[in-house]
Length: 167
Image (tube, one colour):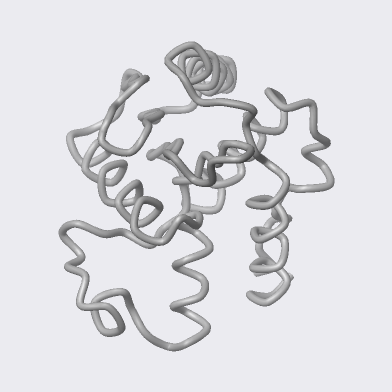
């Protein structure tokens, strides 16, 4: 699957994976679900669920490093700025042959257009927050978040996931 197909699938994910609301209970449910998935699979990662400007859930699993929270912050900043998944923004920049710094003047110390942060859109309100993970390869970070949202919303993950990259 190429960049164009991946971007189409990510756009579909962003349209389809909308929450009825985002409050502390929903954030706890989503964050706990991702944490449980990670623990059951032996994954090492940081999980962050937030309304913009307000952290609602945070967990750092054993084996993470001080770099992981910084990646979470930088990827979440991309979602807050563009209201799109950090992976989708990064792929768009790659297709254009540019970076967020070159195109937007955004410092890499504050913005990371890498997979793992996904916009939390609420029906009737738009994008109000993000769910972010850091610790896996970027495509796996992205897919883990999408899988958790699919599980919460009763959606078919097999129909929405990004397929493994072709070597």
